[in-house]
Each structure stands twice: as C-alpha cells, then as structure tokens.
Image (tube, rainbow, N blue to C red):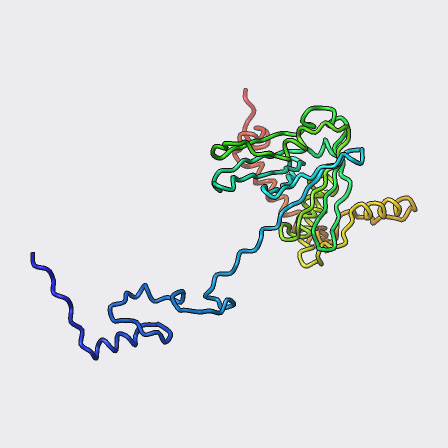
Length: 302
C-alpha cells in the first residue's frame, strides 16, 4: 500500500489557522497540535500569577503530652517524624489517639498505632480555647487504670510494608507502656484541625459532660457563634455550681422553647386527637401478626 502524500495547506489558509489558535498572542506553527496550546506553556516570571502552582501549606500537627505525679515525670508524645491524630466517639464514649510514622526514604511504607481510651477510665478535667483559637483537652487517667499494664487502653497496630529498622512509637512506649501511678494527658488541637463549636460539642458529649439535647443545640445553633478562643469549661462548671449553691431558681421547663411543641388552640387540639385516633384505628384494623385477635375483629376460636 502506497504511503499517503503530505497535505499541502495554502498560505492564506495557513495564516487563518494560525490566527484561530487561542494562544493569547503567541504565534505557533501551523503543524502544532491543539493540545499543546495551554496557559502553562506561556512563559511567566511572576510568582504571584495564577499560572504558577501555589506552594503547599504545612499541615498543622497535633501536640500531646503525658505527665506523672512527680515533676520529672513528663514526656512529649508528638515527634517530627510522626503525625498525630485524635478521634472522639459519642456513641462509645471514647477517645482514640492515632500515630502514623512513615519511612522517609519510602513514603508508601508506614506504621500506624491507635490507642482507644474509654471515658469510663478517665476523669475529664478541662477543655480550653487558647488565644490562637486552638483547643486544649486535659484528662486524667484513673488510678485503677494506671495499675494495669496498658492502662486499660485498647491497642491497634497496622504496618504497611516492611521496615528494616522498627520505628520508635512514643504513643506505644511512653503512653501504653507507661507505669506511673497517675497520668494526666493533654492534647492540643490547632484551629485548622477543628470545626469550632462542633468539635467542642463532640468532645463534651464523648466525655458525658453534656446531654444529647445540648449537643444538638451546640451543633445547630452555634454555627455563626464567635471562635472558641477564651473557652474554659471548668470555669463554666464552677459558675453553675455556685448558682445552684445560692439557690437561684432554674427554669421550669428544661426543654428549650424552640424544641417545645404547644397547642393552645382548641381546634388544633381536636385535629391532633382526631389524627391520632385515625392512625390508631388504622393500626388496630391492620393485619399485623403482632396485633391480638380480639382487636382486629376475628372471632374467638371454638
């Protein structure tokens, strides 16, 4: 089969094709493919221009420490070669500290350590909002938990790949294997890692410091509230206790007005009762196997 002859383009049509290219003033040859025309190919020395890639911001790291009863018993749990993370469970009432150590030469190889700490084995001391709007959580591990190896923590380990030299995990060696009679754990969460009052509500609910109604109120109604700087949960609890000690009357209805359903109109009450009666009769007259026979009109067996 004979090869195809090259396509001859007239000069007028060639100039028209050069002008039709969206090159923003750049003149490309007529045989340049259209996919080679891009803003990224335009030479630009301005580093503030949008054609340059923005430098990646450093990921804010969590900081944690553990302290004992003696002044010299103090250990920092975060390290430059590891990434700390924390998770709170409002259903299981627990806090999970996670440490990820990656191999600097092979980033895909990592070692993960997770410690699950139940709220029943800890005393909630305080939750503070610092000047930079980060959150500082302080908890104390109970003496009964400190007397047991592992401090009644649930250990989870995961290794992705093979390490020639096992990495040193401070979360495992300095917290899980710690044998101090008393331990206080502090976790500092930067503002970029939190969701302001949603995170505050999550932490307080995980440690059973607020009810479910208060949790819903903080999550739904404090979206536009100011930032968490200046928060001091311990001081708030002291103020509440002092008011109760002075005998100040509390509100009669513990449920907020926006969550209270009232029907003062007689016609509205009548409609509600009628609707309830209709649904009740529909359930009674249904053929549900769980409904007794005498309620669905079936004759009694002989």
